[in-house]
Image (cartoon, rainbow, N blue to C red; front, side, top):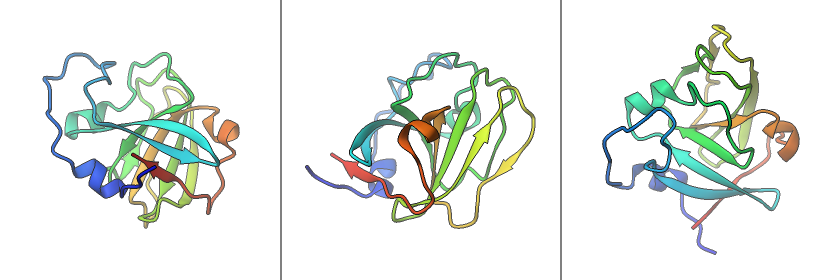
Length: 142
């Protein structure tokens, strides 16, 4: 098992295909991480459009998948998102520094905590399923 830094994976020069549809995540850069010996598949946002759309319009999202946002994403809201989400905020060492439950269609803005390097967006109840805890650590798998 090889381990890579998340910064390396998010900065790799992936071939960017034309944006097909709001729910077309197969063209996104992808990698796997582990949390407490459970594998999670990550789709990384590629550009500003991906970051703005996030999981808008997605009605079903597997609990073992997450959408990753880099440090440029400073806040989140749930307008046009029909499923509840769990946000997990990670520092540079991939340790959890915070988490937040997001209610479908809410216009409440959630600000990313200071020190966040990566935000992972999961379908709820991922936080309960994986037992995410502040201080818990993710491991990148290559």
